[in-house]
Image 1 (cartoon, helix red, strand yellow):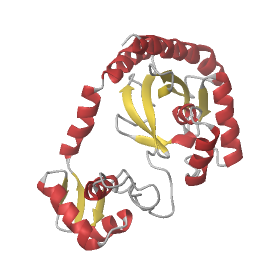
Image 2 (image 1 turned 120 degrees about the vertical axis):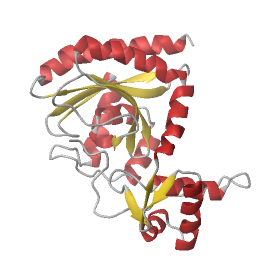
Image 3 (image 1 turned 90 degrees about the vertical axis):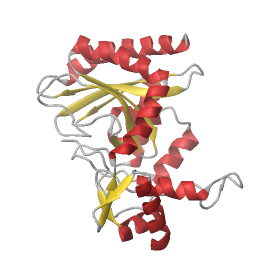
Image 4 (image 1 turned 120 degrees about the horizontal axis):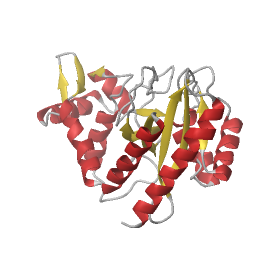
Length: 275
């Protein structure tokens, strides 16, 4: 089963965007910043946290973290059993509101639905969010062996085909900055760990227009990805097909699945250009 969190030996603090250089100024509401940081402190690796753990993860005084947690609890975004805190289902409303009001994903979902049916494999889309790829669309095809992810899941960008497609859209300075702040933690024994090797792979993706990974994200799973573009020509998201090595070899991945994926990506580009 694929892990949707990068392996790490420590629990890194959740960065407060308004802190330090580049503070947005007087219009910036730091209390909101901190409240959202508290929400981001919970993830698959940390579904429940004590007050002290939340405070440490967010870099706040325990008293401040306590007030934020109680505020979020009153809004039903977090809950507590008296010792630990966890997220509440109401948070799903925020993600659902984004997806339901963004017609772009309707276009992507429809095209990926056709693609999944055509090739009998699961199709997905995602965007770059920090060091991870966030799944925004997932159209599963019933298979016994598939990656266990869903909309809202995050996977390490450096180990995924979608991640490399999205990194390829960064300019050289942006890519170097991303590499500076992102640990290339291994997800499987095949995961790229070298900064130079990852940079070379991203450059290759820029040149060929697609990316593939072989068991770097999960043992037995191969993926191929391509970009989709907004009206401004910039990469809006990446789309991907995933398959298991028991039914797809490298030749089938690039000889059969890749052409179908590229056609779907081109269809999405055309659909979005008309909107």
